[in-house]
Length: 164
Image (cartoon, rainbow, N blue to C red; front, side, top):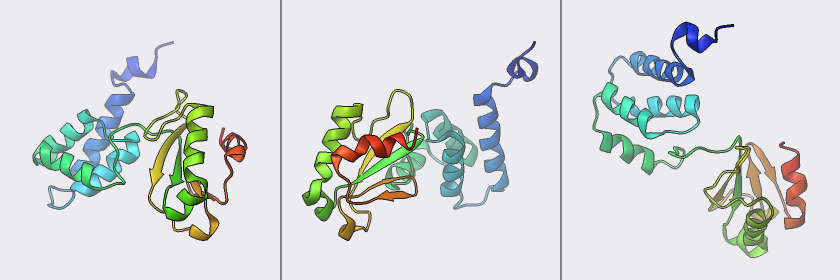
């Protein structure tokens, strides 16, 4: 049996670049579309690796330094892969005082996950955030749209197992 890649001559990466090209073409060369193109590209790839940024720079005819400037300025953009589930540990004052650092320490020790890192299986990545706005429920972690409140380090394995 011949693989789809062999039939079309285009691998998954090629298809992604074709989709990004369609996003760029849909902007019609209008100014101010860079953020929208970057958001859609990140949605397709999961992050913004250098080849994607170079393609966007070239095809939108804007300097690569400007593209990097936008990506590094806005916190919702990332140039590194993230896990299927992003664990955000609140390190705001209330969460920190009530055990936020112990949560980080437990994740480092038990699943060998450092802030900014990703598990080898690609399931989880870890971020620290300044505040999740749930101070009365501290310490808090968010995984996707789920907010886990009054988290104890001993509960982390159970919480994470529900995402496997």
